[in-house]
Image (cartoon, rainbow, N blue to C red; front, side, top):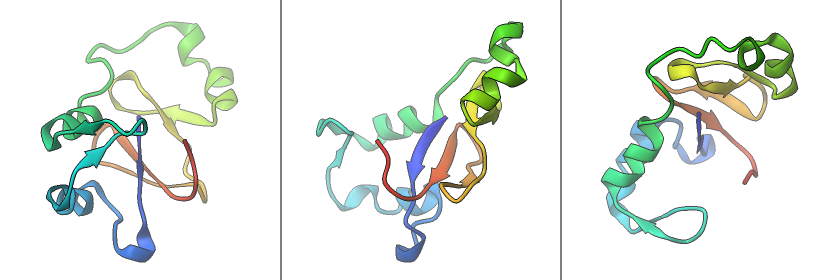
Length: 101
């Protein structure tokens, strides 16, 4: 899943909140590379696979637990809800707060 950093204290709680701000200035990825709005949305929304993974190794509860994950859409692992992961997006993204890389 894409880890979408949200700032509830600044009323940025969802991808829609971010979309309304994307045109305010350049969007930079974690490496400082400028990306277009269309590319940013593709990175967030177009993830995973359409087919379901059936590998017992990948879908085992042990692997999910080790990665603090649950199964998400499009065969992706998503964060477990916590103080850090405060919600799930409607697609292939999770809402996270705090410092992360």
